[in-house]
Length: 388
Image (cartoon, rainbow, N blue to C red):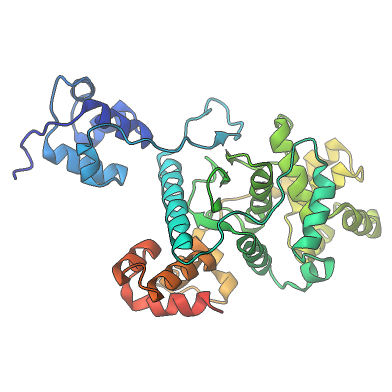
């Protein structure tokens, strides 16, 4: 069929696919190298698009071409509540963020189906909390429940090891943790507790210490049963009650009040010196910003001191590739090894779900490769690493 031929579609579907992908009419016009009037005419049903135009938008939206030929817009889960507190961006997201949200929903649905096939529980093994509960005492309880003792925290050699330890604990609770390249200026993470299995997604472009904080912040949203997309930021004085609660939970989990007071009292004479902050940060694998937040919270420094010292540690966007150093993989000129990248993005539990379904003939080999977004040559390597 010539690509220049016009095709009859439901204009509502055409508009829905554009809007659900975060594209404006101007964006579409530029992509199709046409005018905004043409795009408006297609959406109003006055003009039929060409097959070439649909193929172009299929690639742009990362949607199958067949989606444009649906009889009506397909119902989709609503986006998580926007807690980012970003000026003039309420419910307005980067196209890449929207794509990652859609991908996470797909992986959540796939995970549920794969779990049912092999009779795995999908409900999270947690007790739901309420915003009226004390986040600090709840954080202390979860430190005990997850075996995150002070001894364990200091024994973990790097921030990557600590992230992996906590990620494994989340998976033990039937909470899947995915990582993807969410633009950190748009969002740092989101939580999807409205379906099982519950899902947390973090930006792989963020620093590892920031990801650790975001992981526990999103876990707090899971505990509250609150779908959210946010920008965990303990420095923001204009947080709403839920974001404040989640920040309190995360900071208290990563550094309990008893620990924090003991550490700060032992270093009180030079508490905000760079050398002291570096030493404490390395030992407990938390960011200097979070240490300062706790110092302010427990009245070891004033608000003006907090702001002044924090200026030293305005985070820079890290290279996405550095996240894989946690596995002891040296960077090669060719980039991150594909097996390492796969495990980093979807986690051990999702890989195990795929592998077990394949072993029991519930899915084909091609299905398994597609779910993991990998090529056949690294399939065995991914499974071997996931089983360690």
